[in-house]
Structure formats: structure tokens, C-alpha cells
Image (cartoon, rainbow, N blue to C red; front, side, top):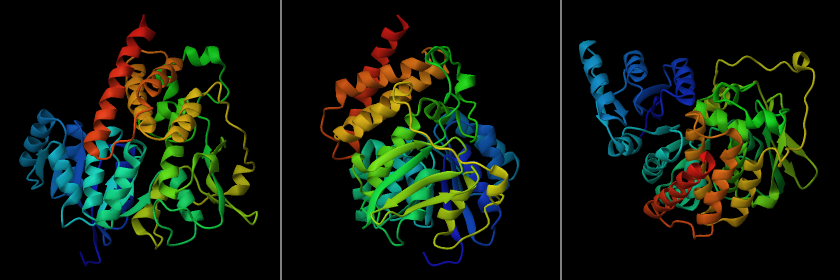
Length: 398
């Protein structure tokens, strides 16, 4: 659509990425208009956002929550139409009046609306890494078929995107690139012993030293599974095999990732650890706009440190490398089992150090299968891996 104002659907509006997106959008009222907001069941939070941003649609995954939002908005005189369910999510992602979709639903639930946006040729700000980890080829094919534009939101992938030559297509390797280095903070347990990690509580795992994130991704950061999933995502986004993708621990979270070129040059993107920076970059690309993030002061920071990751203490990172090398159903199975394991840990039904055991069991049981060729096959692999993971949970609890 031709307009000076970009209309945006924010999938996962009540999460940390969604709220950061709304913060940036609110700083530029003449550039962006919120068309639709979604949440799973956070009725109060979504209702408040609707009253503040007045979207045309609000979508919830839970019927009772949708009813509560509908009642509250009606009593406040707000004309936002409240919808419910997966079909509604896909509709607001693919709506002809929308040109930009922030895909920020956490986990496998974000796959279907992201693919709907891709098929409809939207400008997709991709924060839902599971769309690529679960269904990389399916998602990229939908993007090609719909002529969609994908702009990465994860700080690491956005940094890599900024360090690559302009105009590089999604899924194709840039000429002259030797390898990509994704930086990892190391999380809250970077210096923890194996015994300390075995006793870790959800509160400790979610206490990230640098970033403010949701509970699930905070646990993934603590296990370094998040970095492993980002490794798989980077392979699909930037067209490089596992052998040309590395992870390096950088506890300050100032260097967000690096691209090493054949001529010996290494380009890096630096910035304060605040997701509004990559969000603002993707929203305005190829222009630059104010994100609300303070400028970086290297003199104040004084020191930047780097170290190799410890694969023994963080086996989830090793499993991600193995899944990426194996290909096929392995990345999808790894992601599904990890979601089951992390949910159990957050519910205090699984030890922190057993998250990797659950993921490995599913990887061994399901990972050798061929990759799904469409969404239905991908979701079948996802269901099978979750079933294996749940059985493994009972063994860990025994």
C-alpha cells in the first residue's frame, strides 16, 4: 500500500519485544499506525494497550480473555474490535491494510501467523526465531512466493544484517564472508559450577545480568539454548552452514555479533543492550530513527571481554550445533522438546540441568526424520517431539 504512514500488526504485543516496539512506535506518531495487537491471555495488559494505541483489532488466543477485553473496551468507549483464535491471528498478519508485521509471539505458536504474513508479502520484523528453527525451508519458501521482506529483530541477527553488504537477500550467503560470530552474554550462570546449576531456581535462571526479557527466553539464555537456536536461525537467514557459524561469549553484551570477511576484516555492531535499537533499525530500514536508547560510551565501559563457550556446562549449545549439522527434523524436534522442558522447569517440575536431557532424548528419537515439507508436517514433527519430551519428563522426575 502507498502511504507515508506504515501500518503495523504486533503479534505478541504484551511481551518484552511487543512493548519495546510500541515504545519506539509511540516516539514517531507521524510514521507508524498500530493496526492490530495480539496476546495469548493477558487480558488486562492488552486492554490497556488498546486504550492507549487504539488499534483496529485486538486478537487473543483465549476465549475468556477475549471476552474480558471486549467488555472492558466497550465500557471505555473504545472501538477496537476484539477477535479470538489462530485464524484471527493469521488474518491480522495478512490483512491488506497492513504493510509491517512484528512477529514476536514466543515459541511454536508464532509459526502460522508468521507464514501467513510471508505469503501475503508483508515486511516481517522477525523476532520469532522458532519460525526458522522449526520450519526454515517452509518459511523461506513462503517469503519467496509472497515476495515478503524479512528483517531480523534478535539483536545478534540484526547486528549481522547491519554488517553484511546492503541488499543481501534472505537465505543467500553474502560474497566474501568467511564466517559469522554470534555473541552470547553467558547468562546468569556463566561462572556457576555444575552443582550450583543443578540447584538453580526459576528466579535465578530468569535474572539475566544485562537484558530484560520474558521468562522463557531468559531460561533459554541461562542454558545457552537461546544461542543455539539463534545459530540455527542464522544459518537460514544468512545462508551459511554450521561450520561457518560460531558462538563467542561476551559478558558485557555490547558487541552484538560480528562478520568475518575473507580479506581479514571483521565488522561488528555495537550498542547498549536494549532491544529498542534493533527494533528501530528494522522499523525504519534503510533509514535511521530515534529509538530512545542512550548513546554508547566506550570510555565508560572501559573493557570488552571475549571467551569460548563451555560446551560441557552448557550442553544445550552442543545439541543445537548437532541439530544444525544433522538438518532434517532435528532443529524442529530440539525446539519442541526445549519448550516442554523449560515450561516444566518454570513450574518447578524439572531440574535446570535436566532441560538438556529432555531435549537430547527428543533429538535422538525424532531428529533423524526428514524435514517437514509444509506446515502440517512441521507441526506433526513438533507434536511427536513434545510427546517424547513429556515421557522423558516423567523419567527425570522418577
